[in-house]
Structure formats: C-alpha cells, structure tokens
Length: 383
Image (cartoon, rainbow, N blue to C red; front, side, top):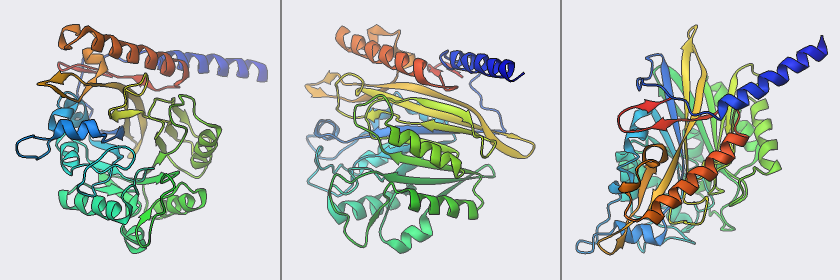
C-alpha cells in the first residue's frame, strides 16, 4: 500500500507541474465578490536614462505617468498592489546607479498607476544616507502612499511594523527586509530592516498577536542575475514557512526565479513562494534583465475564512523606443503585445521582447509549481 500511495503522489505531482506550465484562459474578467486579489510587483529602478526621459526640458519638471500607461489596467484590476521601490527620494541632484535619488514624481506615477503599497528595504535604501532614508519616508507619507521596510526611528518601527492591510474584512501583515545596504552604514536613529532570522521571527510573532489572517514577507535577497535561487534562499523560505508565513515574495536578482504554490505541512494551508519577480522598470537591457513579472495571488472566502485559491504571473517587458530624439520607457504586458509587431518602432525591439518571453516561459514552465501564466489583453483578462 505504501508503494501504491507513493506512486499516486508522484503522478499527482507531475500532473500539477504540467498544469502549472499552461497559461490559464477564460472569457471572464470579473473577480468573484468573495475573492481578494493581491498583485506583487518587482524592482522599480531609477537609472539616469529614466530620469532624463521623464524631464521636461523647458520647465525642468518630471513626469513618469507615461511609463505605466500600458500596464496600468493590469495593476488597477487588482484589489491590492504592492511594489519594490528601489530608489531613494533624497531630492536633487537626481542620479541613478550607483547611488539612486529619483524625483518624487516617480512615486506619484506609481500611485496613479494603481500601486497601493511600496516596500523600501533594499540594497539601495541607504544610498544617500540618513537624508535619503528620511526623505523617502517623509515624501511617501506626504503623498499618502503606505510603505514599510525603512523607519525614522525605533519608535516608528515599533508602532508601524508590521504594516497591516485591511481589505474586505481580511487582515494582511506586510513585512519587508533586505540582505544588504551595499556596505553603507545606516546611521542612527533611522532604520532599514535587515534580513535576520531572529528579528523576522519576532516580527512574525508580533503579526500573529495582531491576529493577521495572512503574513507576507517581501524579501530583498539572492544573487544578482542568477535565475536559480541560492540554497540560502530555499533554506530561509522553508524556515519562514515553518513559523507561519503565508507568502514569501523576493526581489533583487533583477531576473526571474521560480514560483511555488504548495501546501504547508505545518499550518495545513497553502503557501506561495516567489524567489524573484525580476525587474519591473529599469534601464537594464541585457538579456533576462529587460523585463520581469507581476505575481497575482487570489484569496477566496470559504466557511467564513479566506485561503489562497489561485496564483499566477504576468510577464512584463520594458520597451524603450526613441521618440523625438529621446529614449522613452514603457512597461508592456507581454501577452498583449507578443502578437502585435506593428506596435513597435523597429523590428529589433519586437524580436528582443519575444526573446525575453521565450526565455522566461522556458524557465518558469520548467521550474514553477502550481503557478501559471496569466494572459492579459485590453479586451479581457484570462485566468
């Protein structure tokens, strides 16, 4: 009987893996009334070329709204959208790599596009020292954009972390940490949450005390440009699952890594682990860095309790045509534009996007478990 049971488990696992590689298609765009959708968005960068692109040469004001205009319908469709904000708002002089400071209008454009929450603990959080950390916090507060990961002082951290998101009667605790600040010391009293198991365990326990229905860790971790998660990532993910974390969402590698939806043997609930979302918008143009993913997780109510009912990803690619002698940046939902070669200014751009799509699907179809691609177009969305 044990041999038969083992065989059946193996067959079931292979079946689920096969299903996870197939895009889900449906004619119904509507989300059921008893379902809440969460959208996780990767690295929002601010390289020099992006800053120059957003500047009005006459007024010297900055506007990033057009960057998001093609992806906005996908973002706005989610009930809650959360993104990694990998720049500081330290004020001028504005600059990109290696020490980022972007105009605050980048955050305004994020909000206008439908992004509800930003996480700010990443390896560039301390690029401009205390001024950059406090400037980012104060400017996001003034814009009414909730955020977590960096704090003005320990008192603010104690009162504001975890960030509790209340939606349709569901309480979601959002926690954010980074493995590094690129060797830059974080001066007192400001705080950047560091990726430390003991402190994260305490914060997870605090979220449980606050009766959070779901606990999400948004982690800046892993090895840059490596599409395979490091053992340290998989070990940490297993540990966080064991202490009751429901979703682990990763950023930093600037390329895609695998996504897993699985049953947690400790809690009995389904968990989601996304090792790396990849880039959302940047000026990185090397293969596999010129795009990324948005991961949508759905929570559905059953017997007066919400549980993870679905998880999938959208591929996104950054299109950078030259318009009026200036490089522009547009985030495209790949599944809508992969069959529209006439949209692109040059055939080479379409070929590059198709290459990104092909590489990404090969990686994720081969490694994902129970996390499928979502297909989007302007007429209807497929799940």
